[in-house]
Length: 193
Image (tube, rainbow, N blue to C red; front, side):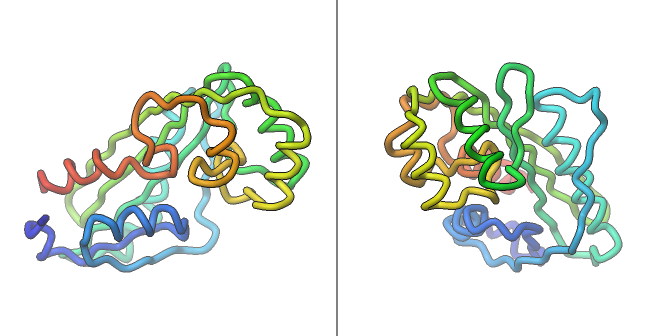
């Protein structure tokens, strides 16, 4: 499948083990290529879906100089959006605990922006999933944060981990988007190339 990609050298610009796992599941050959210290800041006036789209495009621009003819770079950014507030990756365990307390008993959005970039073409898209959390106890939150150290995850949780097993009541939209990459939508976009 995706024989149309054979002419490309595909670069995944992410160290995320979840994104690597999901892209590997498509059965395509790719390399992981990451640049240190890519600026992920964004204008304060951006809201919801605008934020990960902006950051995914900004990440892609950081790779422009290294894009040779025949290269395709995939960049992505995932955020959690709750009551008009963005929850990114926590800065420490106390921040992770605070984020999970905010999410407890509420429904939030997980939004991923994806940017496909070649030397002369770019496509950007996003996916939104709604996740409903049950009410979590402080002991459950503390156990998860101290055992799983979710400091590399937007919103301080991995849906595929213990907290997802016990805390996620329902998901509307792509489960894989909640993991960090809307792989079904990505497949459809890659098919069109």
